[in-house]
Image 1 (cartoon, rainbow over the protein chains, first blue to last red):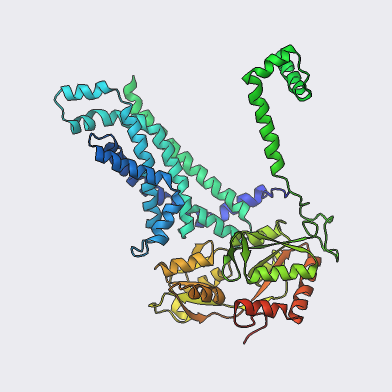
Image 2: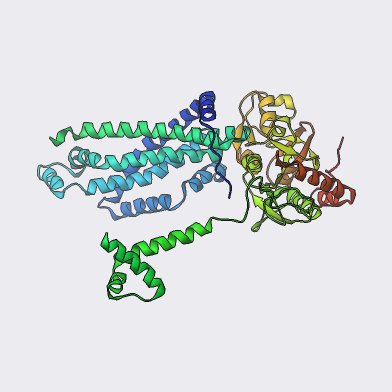
Length: 225
Length: 295
């Protein structure tokens, strides 16, 4: 068995400091990928969640088919199909990754929203309808605001997953954090140190994301008193 | 605590099938079985991970002439499996020029060849850390690599070449200025690309994937070995070869501590050149002998 060769603490910190320029550039791309995919993913998610719980059966089928396909295939396969597969469309690397990530996150977010919406007591909907509100208005003014609060913990989870999934863009040459780590690592024949450095970057990003989501949860829970 | 003792007694007595009444009752309980099965599973899994290698620097295993190797009687060499026609997947095994050379050298050393597929970008580091005896993966000889591993004498001569899509207007090295070039991570082509285009290239895990992306309309050019590109063109990939960017010598890499093994490998290379095996292997894959210096 080989020993795990850990870099010395001083070498690790030296590398962390020396490589910050190129890693910060990579971090920018990672953040861009994550933000775009989450942002678009939320809209896709809400759309398909509403489709799924709609009274129109066909909509339900469409939503189920989409969620099944996107959740049922690995994200890397989806990214490769958009980049290497759809040759006539010639999607550039960053956008192939962003779109794949957005649709992938969207499917999971759709289920998160659906769960949150359906967990709202039926009484709320009945109250809204009996007040004369149309179905759309009830959804918009009564159900959704309450559902969003319920959706926050699993959504925060999905954001973190989305952030880490962005590392798969490395395989189609997007120079985000993971690609920078493996490239620098192989150029200096020292993968271990660079992988540990990039792990630190991801940890910091996840920390910030968790903090943001927690703050949001707190703000929305003011009504609980 | 007393119950704990009874459980342990039940454990052992179960093995010896002489359980008393109390133990028999405990054996029927789920509380007994769950940890029992769990520990059996752990024991089974822990025995999976061990292998017979003795690790780096252990002089217990060695070749006939006394060079240290990882496993007795075996020559473990790495290749990427992603560098047609030098190493590529052929069913479950790798085939190709590099693999054939690795096998031939192994024969000369009197050892059984064991090939290991490994990501190219990590092979040199793998050699350094003792994962394999050697790397037969078309490593170009350059100063940077010499600092980390020992390189044998060249076993073939080749050179980087520019590849583009058919309608592109890049032909010579100067046309590469400011263009987006795709290369394989950890390859010597990365520096060449940077030098000629003046900007950071796009990194892929393998040259073959980079060429595919080029054919699919991404990037402006790819810099890779002329043989790899030629092979890709043979496979109907829509790319064209442009100017060759100089000559390069490819060698086998071995850990810096293993001077003896590199000497044996060098002798083996000489022997293979002398008896024509190297030439044979070369002509099998290319219609020419790339194991001697070309002009």
